[in-house]
View (cartoon, chains in turn red, orange):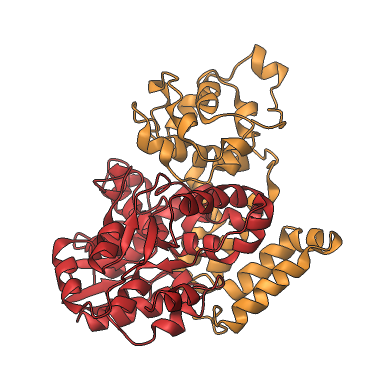
Length: 284
Length: 203
């Protein structure tokens, strides 16, 4: 199949391993991705915080460019971009659309959060057939964060309080996804630069609970969650007076691992918190 | 709630600005009038520990015309826009979206931001994407650290080593792409973000 792809800025930089793993697994599953031509930044938190109109128009420009491609589906790995694109599509088709200096093309594709796309029954079956190295013995918690789900009216998610997309993916890959209460709690996202103290408090709580339910690692679909949970683990441990040692995997990296796609160890080596030794221990 | 004191003014209290809710609703609808103070927003909010006013109090103060209190509070800035409140509100009050609108109104009214580093973060981000149409982290991170004074602060307190170490680690692991890409539509992005257009927005 063919699909439109909107990578977003972070996947070209700090979340390079997320981008690399997505391209490889899609190639493996015979999904051809075509990037939105000349896409721009969605505006992220900065735009919606201090310039609402720009936030809708920035994302709207991307939707119109995506409409030029013939594919029915657009895959968006970054939940922040996903949320902004969905918000723009909602606003530009709603009662207040006249407020914006941009009109929406009538042939925009369906906007998919990438994890939800891979958790559809068709994709799960396609994936299950390709599993060569099941994730036996790997116990994880799936952490969904905010942007792929809230608010329901915009994201059209059916399971906002207890999302299951990544849990389903992990189970199909042969791993164990443990149940835990902080699936959709906030990690503080961009506040990591302006209010590190807040992020330490929010993320420390997640580590603590993940370890208490017996998880060996956390699986995420958002590169901001990944960055906040992966990069500052030691210093947050100091703040909490505890030692945390939790690899933070992108779900796509674990898909690659189970499907024995090439490059997995190269992606994982880009993480700040050691994420290879756990896999070596488990013989994966 | 911590020690941060909300800034109530005597004149606001005695002469409430009842146009405030209407003024905000013109950018909405946010359904503020539907709030019946059940406090579900506040109870589910993950960052109340950093707030001087709880989310339900912000809505109440909007309704009773306490302009200065809501525009100068820390709450609107420390809100991380996780949208738990908006999602759970039984009356469909768009609380997160209202917080954003209050930030814009505060800037427009020239109210000093009580969390200047958060405002600087947003401004630096938008300035960065104006240059090439996409975010370039390699210039964004240092320019934020310099503009916000965060770098100087950390330098003085001798806390800069941790950041430097993380930066080097990220470079070593290939997490930065040293070559930025400038999109053809950079002009479109600049036009969308131009201040002149913003002034037009508010008229």
